Length: 382
Image (cartoon, rainbow, N blue to C red; front, side, top):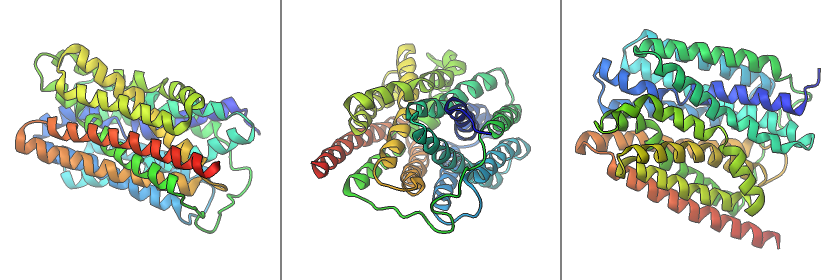
């Protein structure tokens, strides 16, 4: 049975909420009570976070090469593995198992993002409803807000993981009921999708890599920063909810700006706004500073993700899976570096100021690169 474009976008929203909003980002609000209960160091906490991003990179590379079966099959596999890994985090205290589970969850999250985006965005474009892609990407913010609100009602880190797994299962089942089977085999079935890399695309990929480094330190340690600051500790239950609240409508807003000034210029503006939020998270440890840090982070990181993937999709012809996967891989490399670096520096200095300053500088450079990529693309088209 054919699904309406709106139903397809809603199915994508649910898949993104389960696989990304919950599967990847619920670690941040669970991290502080988990660190306290298990006496984890910041370096160990950063290592667990990075394991997820290593898996995300592996998933992106797998999605870029030959995989048998339909895109929907791999999407459903990613959703199932994601829920299983979330639940399993509650039944161990072994660092080695934490690393393995978050690595597998990273693979699952990459599959959810790449296969749901390739499947849903292709169909929306074919029906002339590409504007509904914002609904698809808003699932990340909705997943973040819903899971953050859920874990805020709980006190035990194990129950937080189990409750998050249950929420992910509900979203995954609903997504499976809505997203239909592929109407036709992928044009790259049986071989890796060919991806021609223009200089503008390479610049965008480097900017995406810097974006990965630039946002992930704050995204990993924001709640820990709030928890460790007596003047703002009371904001701990709300800060990550604010990130999700900011993320949910952000793709619509940045998409509208992208249509007005161009995808890559909008990427540059969002990078600068996110840099301001990163700086606020460590230099303005007051209530307003936390609110700005949370809203600026939430209000930009999914917008940047969407703008980057849309820019990559438009950077060539044929199945966009290869370009989306390469962008996701570049993003993952940045995320792998960020938490480990920040955790080591924190353990050595007792502060996240310097890692955050470097992250903000990376975001400013990403803005410059995206503008350069836009200039080069326009010159090639003229």
